[in-house]
Image (tube, rainbow, N blue to C red; front, side, top):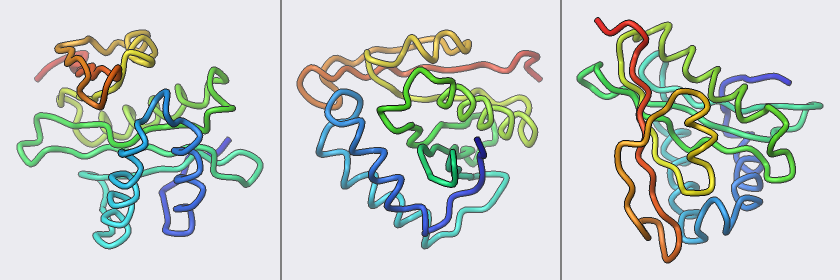
Length: 158
């Protein structure tokens, strides 16, 4: 498994991975948001360390993606569009990707609080990694798809 920076050539594989997670983990209407976001990533050429987006490769095939953005105040970060192809869930790939992202954030900005939002279907995955639920909004993403806002505080706050 290889985790590397996203390129425009990875777009279709990322979209395919996203589609494989619909409708359980992402609502169909979110697909256009994801595609528009990828376009923004490609056009803005996001730069480290404040924003990064990665892909996960296995056997020379892109099977997942995810990134982060640091807020301008440099006190908070947010995880952006993290996902692994549905048929590869529960194989440690998502965990490797999120730990890679956390490490990249902590290396550049050790004292930030890391935020993410997810659903009732995957919040427990993030809890196992130390994220704490700070708010639940029922039906936020669509009927029956509840939003869990979570955060991971720095181990040794500044």
